[in-house]
Image (cartoon, rainbow, N blue to C red):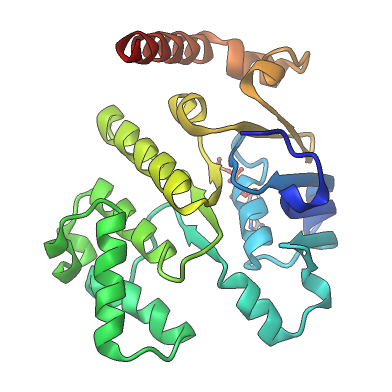
Length: 271
Ligand SMILES: Nc1ncnc2c1ncn2[C@@H]1O[C@H](COP(=O)(O)OP(=O)(O)OP(=O)(O)O)[C@@H](O)[C@H]1O
């Protein structure tokens, strides 16, 4: 992906964000530009506020201070209807899929469409079927309840719902957590394929070093109440001990080795 060179390449811009709960300051003067079409991984120690950051961007957490601009619009200057329209351009996959347990997968997707569009019901079902297939689920998954699906399928169903309104930006909170390594790699591939096919911008909280290597263009590390962004190669050179340990500790090195050998295999099979 080309490096961002102009404001037009920036799809989300956070400036001087502060998030505080009581006396607990979680983010302070946090500034972050998210580039159009990138897959940005968000990492950080437990409790550094990764989920709060994601919730702040999508409007589920009220920031204490700072500016958020999405698709060139300052969210604090929008009327409620404008803000709602803007938010429809963002899809979210929460950690547990956050599906309504009393609705089938198809009904979960239809519910989002019903809330935000006036499309006829037969059309809603067709769109839901399309999203189910985009998320790599078999057609019969649409008629199943979340409790009837495996963890991996539930994540895919959550992704199908996040894609319901054809978003420009998708936020994923630990999408591969709880999946076995094969399921996690398949889910990474799905996200990567969808990103390419639909031109999505993806922001993904993850602890999964393999995912970072496999699909993220840049990584944002939450540290000292701010976020440090770079490629893995750039971050590996950072002197900060947490970042060093994360990318250059035993697990980080193993993920780097495994990714390098996979890239080599892919290159030699192409030549
Ligand atoms: N609405 C809230 N009110 C008060 N405190 C909150 C609220 N939301 C989050 N917090 C606190 O903010 C801190 C960061 O939470 P968050 O879930 O964002 O961390 P995280 O980096 O995603 O952690 P983990 O990797 O463990 O999931 C936690 O201490 C949490 O208790």
